[in-house]
Length: 116
Length: 113
Image (cartoon, rainbow over all chains, first blue to last red; front, side):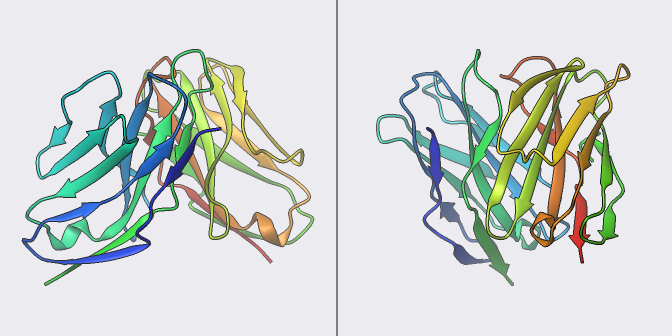
């Protein structure tokens, strides 16, 4: 069974600084999808970024980028120029490929605090 | 705003009762997923529907059931409620296949007293 591990329960960063959140996963699949979701205090789950395992290029979305290391089964999220609004729980998630259930498997999350 | 709506936002009920949570997917989305978020279990997949048909089941209790209607909205029914069922219940939707990104609704916070 696939598992997702986020080893940092809590992290903090100063406003305008850069922070990296770690995620590792375990799977025997070759094709899959990885996601980072953000959950601010409002509890809404917001998609941050998506990475397809077959793509070698790391995904980027504005200030958010990932470092995808397929062989190491690592998928870290880098937040540049951190803003107060980035304060949230961040969840790493894994999706099995076509033909499977298609549900997301989540890590336990990293609570990020951005300090002024 | 993801385009996924869930009602009610909050629900307080007593043990042994039954409640229904409602979800309307994004316009055009055929797949609906239900997830439970609790302090001890984290975010867990419950069940998926695709165009009215059950597609996959996760860690869903027998006391829980769901359905997706012809207009594609979905309902999650929770019965014989226990204290441990208190959680945030999310609905998510995606366009067509399992490969599509899932967009989450705001959730329904259930408190069982």
